[in-house]
Image 1: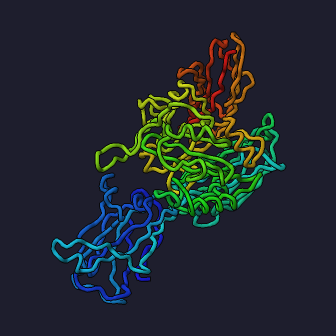
Image 2: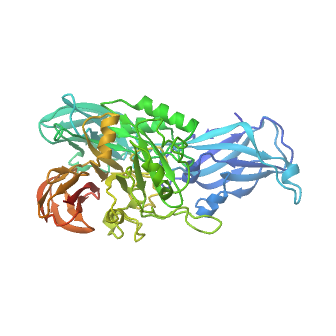
Image 3: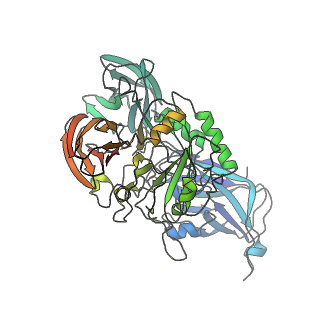
Length: 611
């Protein structure tokens, strides 16, 4: 290898700590005086996320350094991801070491590694006045990695599967750094797990799986860790301190399915290395979702994966699919300058595969309506509907994309991503607590419902770092905690592709942001997402049951953009029967809630038709 890292090959994820790297370039041939050298970064996501503070090179005069905080325009102009450019005044000798010093601030995402390489341009091209430069040539073997790894443990989470199965509740204890990356304690830490009337002693260093006996009621697990057992740079900032112990409480587990349906959590909108602006592999992303977040389903949404990219997607999803424990299905993102939506299906050869038989590869969602209406067994899920692109085109300073054009629903438009990295998309005006930082664009979810769309709600991250369920702070504009999570909950008959897909299609869903609350919402017995036809004057009654981790700031029922009922609760378990009045016209009703820890919940609407 002609480019190697001699110090700090691994850097802890951080917001601010500068890390000094020493690289050694040992050319594999002689280069004459006047040669131009470039040190280039690799994938776009790492190039955006790593911040370069300073650089210098022995034997080279640096003529260009990448800024620590470049503008969007500068980012788009640097298409080759050049970190530094240097003139070699005396050339370079084969086999001799030329140190390069880089001072960087790594990203907050473990696994978003910077891939560096050396490119050269000969002096006959770079040195002659007015002579056009030939393309730079990448030196063979000149690739090395600056690795971003998890920092010290500063959080501890315990996740339960929301419904007991086979007489037990599966759980996982996950030490995390302050950004939510799975981490490891410096040494084995003794802990106690409180479950029902039992206390179990465990030792935790990394991710630790547990099997707990089934409870006969709604139950939460508690983990207690002695603070004396933590190393000096370790903390559990998301816990509650009680004397010498730190206590962390899990999400709830139900003792059994409800009306034949079991609750499940998953994430269906995240990007990997197969997206031009993503990173980490699908296989690693799925492993993280299953083993470190205790999710029960997942689907990627890479940008236009066709050919080999789609084949790799299918292989990874088929290998990870494990009915009864972890379900995968297929999806991809269709983007345009006028709206973005994702397509999902359970057949890897569905006509809606990018470049497949339906013929959808480019264009705008509004232009695909006829093609979509000719398909079956699919879901079209619009996202960041009320947002405008933060980045702009160089030629005319216009946004790269605009809000979603709500025009004509297709039979596949049964869900919408109501919350994601670009914030809450429910309405056109919010207070800060609801995290809606794109407002007044006329393409909110409420705007869609007013135009006749019948949409259930999902939550997705739209992150480009290959970590399902976790936010990308670059796209969240720094407005949410860096360890924030968002998921989709669903009521399904079973954990298999067909059942889960049909449950999503039936809109039996809720969006859960910084919570794994289990939400049950019905109107006159119709479960959230369903359509109910009633006679004029029929009395309507909603039933709400939410089992969360913390008490509620507010729980609201919304209809026709208005809050028609609200209540607070100082307990994490809430149940109510709400009289909605008499059916006078077709309408929809949905539930939203704010938790005391800042979490947000949205239950899909029940749609009422008056016959």
